[in-house]
Image (cartoon, rainbow, N blue to C red; front, side):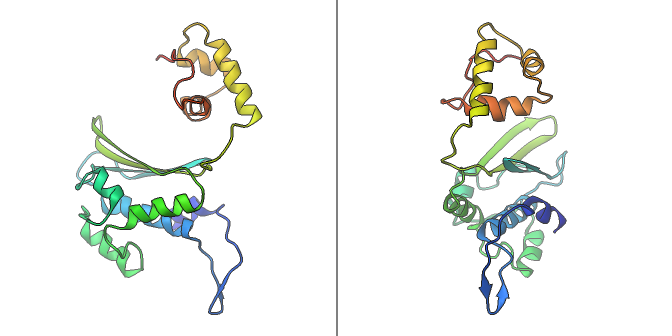
Amino acid sequence: MAVYKKLTEDFKVPFMLEDPYRVEETPKHKAVREAIANCLANADFFQKGGVVIERYPDLIELSNPGTIILGKGQMIHGGLSEPRNKNILKMFNLIGIGEHAGSGVPEIYEVWRAEGLKDPIVEETFGTEIGDRTKVTLPLTSSQSLVTSDEAGDEAKLLSFCSEPKSKTEIREYMGIKTERYIRQKLISISPSGGDPTGLLVG
């Protein structure tokens, strides 16, 4: 519950009454809660690494050990459910979370689209140092968002600097950035193609 509150603490809740209590949650809140339940119910706790849930200004990431039993396509499409940890899912069911097996992830997509946000992203990785993993990313940015003037200026600086091949370390130092994550999410992702705007980003 503490993790859920931390992830959703800045979600806006419009004033609404329901018999005659105020509604404290929106569909967006409930979608995040479903994503947490799905993450825990499908984690392979026999593998290395644990469940990792991170909140950033522009996204939420939920990562668990193990891949999807029925496959990513079926998970996104819904209709069938094969949770790895059935008892964990039953416990969530008792408090009204994850009640409709096989519909959780499709409903998250529906809520995100209704909110005008970019689509969630489901990724599987195999054979990493800590085993197979599944990651669900919930973007918190609008699907219609425009590049800000500051972002456009950063991209122009980056393109100019990378007229000759540069390493990620050189780019970070030039832009005064401490983490590679910012480069990938804030600079590379704002290019019109959504990829590396320079084609020269090397390790």
